[in-house]
Image: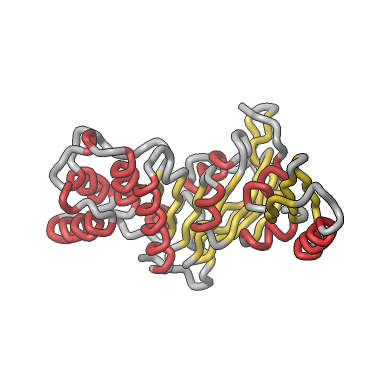
Length: 293
């Protein structure tokens, strides 16, 4: 696995990309270190896909710089350090799981017994050893996603781009994929992870960048983002007459106040709960709550 001397695997610095009158990415900057999962979150049209394409070297920025493993995306050494698992599955349904891995391994120069050992390692890693000889077309959605991840890893890259890696899978497969991502991070790889699932992002990602209209709105851990943009907690009191909601910085004080007031009133509290901000709250507060195409 290729490593960089500084520990910074990906550096995106002030990149801009315009398509005609549309500014897809507008001055975006962030870094991803080895041993880190960096979540890239944003609504449709936020610029995530264009950013991923620039990191891959498929698109050149109009301004700014993208650096992978210390080099430009166009350099062969940088490309060898990068593995990509796209949202549109990059596997062949007519091939078996092992044949898919052999194909991608050969593209990266693996041959003979070394290639077979790598296929065995990856099939075991994604728990598909017992389906190695089965055609991928017969796999469930979750199994295809796992094979898609394995194919991205055939050349043992230090850096992985995972674009919606759990899209359309069942809860068990999602958990298997998230556990695989956690193991890859623990191996010291740098991972860029895009997803629309907020709970998944909070579990999988060490840091998160929220992007909208091509601009990085904020970067931080889930806890930091919630603290900065989540707003105050809400105390919800259920009464016979209806629901009372109180926004507060001190939920305990509000609960005590409500319960003390109950001693002197007929409309007593039937239940009390505290609702705290989540990553989804942060996302909606930063990007807006209107539907987009």
